[in-house]
Image (cartoon, rainbow, N blue to C red; front, side, top):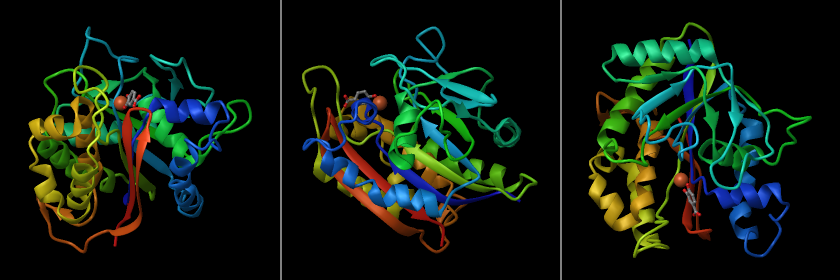
Length: 292
Ligand code: DHB
Ligand code: FE
């Protein structure tokens, strides 16, 4: 049987990808940010998964106002890096896991969540920046990502967006789906995006350290309460793009301590936690949780 053994949480700021691709990681501005991921890169080497289920949001790269799926699962064999801003990053193709992705689609839809099945999809900084932060710089000509990735895109760009509670419930359904897959696979689930940031309007540049850190405490220690935070609190406290954080609740809901909507089991081990301000316009948060 397949099993989720760990979850990873990280912001996905596109300028981080640009800094890596342009060799700027040792500049004074970027050094403290990348230092927070030294542990993580070693952890990835030491805990290499068979598959990463990567929850992220598309930024008008694969989808547009023409079509807005709330939850979209990538079932393709491969996904091409693309981007709406800086242009496609020079990173390896992302290989998928069509068999496990199709199984998860079947199981999660039968658990009454409506997923959009996407057989062809480009992936933007929302997906490739977290991979780069965790795996380091890779040459697209000679290197590959360490394992297949199932992209899972959540609409947090165009209203109406899903609630944290729905994301948390969905995480539980995804774990059930993974655990009913008939092959021994070590699966990691990643929740990406956030933390506080607002890219436009009168409050552009908003960052809220206190709120971010309290929310992260809650996510780790009391995920049931964290799931109840209403979407308007994210927008008010963490800025219009702070709503990306609801995606972290999908990964948290998939951890082993959460059962029937309650945190009943032993709490996951916090292998790593990091917070840094700023990177571009964004507060960067990062955590790694391992199932007890
Ligand atoms: C920035 C952050 C994002 O999450 C994003 O999708 C685009 C830009 C930024 O901080 O510049
Ligand atoms: Fe974003």
